[in-house]
Structure formats: C-alpha cells, structure tokens
Amino acid sequence: MTNTNEIGKFLLRITLGLVFLANGVAKFQGGIENTVGWFESIGIPGFLAYAVGTIEIAGGIAIILGLGTRIVSLLFGIIMIGAIFTVNLPNGFLNGYVFDLVLLIIAIHLILNGSKLYSLGQLLFKGRQSEEFNG
Image (cartoon, rainbow, N blue to C red):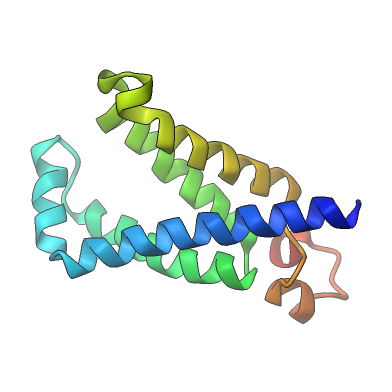
C-alpha cells in the first residue's frame, strides 16, 4: 500500500462523505415532509425518507471522520442502487443515473479497500484485527 493510494482513498472518502452529508442536510432543511411526499409519489414508502436522510447525515459525518468507512459505504451503495433503479434509470445515462453511478462506484471502492489516512477509526481501533472499524 503506497502513500499515494491512501491519499486517493482519503480524497474519495471525504468527497463521498461531503456529498451525502450535504444531501441529507438538504432533505431536512427543505422540510423532510416534502421528501416524504416525493418518496410516496414515486411509490416508495414515505418513512424511508427519514431513514435515508438520517443515514446521509450520520453516515456523511462518520465517513468524513473515518469511522465505519466500509459499513457506511455499504449503506451509501444501497441508497445509490435504490436511487438508480427507482428514480433515474428511465432518464438514461447522462440525464439520469450518471452521478449516482459515480457515487456507487466510490462507495464500492471504499467497501473493498477502506481508507485509513486521517481516520478516527484507525486511531481508535489500531490494535484490532477487524478492518470494519479502522478502514
């Protein structure tokens, strides 16, 4: 593992965290009930708006800090798969799911590789064998 690889993974982790954090905050700032209504209008149970918004905010903060990077990335990946197939696929690649696909691929990369540089998980759980917390 080279230092440049860790820098790249760090940049992907921070970017993914910031994007999801911003989207989660926007869901609540714009009125989560609006998001609930939109979810219901496209056939998704409205209560999932609360779950998605909370995962985006809490997960965004956690992944920026480097806590549970792989687990949070898995949750983000699930959200992106849902977004692609329930909302954006019919709109095609460029006008639909291209951004979601990029976020999904970043999430998959972090699931597979983790990110230890400037990771609070790495600092807290350095002696543990488990990669779930520190990478």
